[in-house]
Length: 307
Image (cartoon, rainbow, N blue to C red):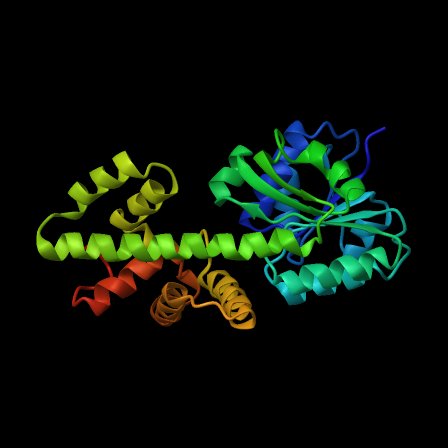
């Protein structure tokens, strides 16, 4: 008999992961759904099928009858609060899986807190945009005790993701350490694209000509972010795909790790300062590729690239 699964937190990434769990996870019980804003749970349940999902009102309700509990929340405080709620009742034998992007110290602390109470814990942040979550093509980073990781692997590669990076029998915090450092690559990529397109426009090369080079030499994420910039999606989108507040949180975690380890990260420091300007200009509509608008402004162009 398959284990009972629950999902806590239904942001853009979490919704796509739940969709694939239901579609490809070989579940023989409804997936339990909890979100602080209940309408998100209700809407997702209606989409996936009320016979294949079960909406609950509290984290405690989600945890009490579940064998495996996935968490995917916005920040460290929310994840800590969710784990505290899970531990209000006996968690012996349960597997808690955190797919959030949090500080590695938070992940290691959660692992100790849960294992001290007889539960198992897996750090499982993921790489990929919401469209990749929807398509089941995320990259899942797994860390923690091998016995715990092995219980989760049936739901990662081929279900929620296209590949695993497996750190079995390493501290769970290794997963979020990779995630935080990995996200600096995304932020620095956006910075390079922003500077390149701005330079191409101001020198007369033209952004379309530069985009041909990007598509040819750097297909994949570079080309995708380049497309979003040139289309004006970086300021026109009402609901960001990578909210500026989350990007700033990730940058702060990375800068803290750099400070603790005595590492020089000037490119990250510049990109983080640009995120501050994005927040000032767009507020909650700010997205990570909105850095393009800031670089344009600093270069004497309008923030927006479309009339």
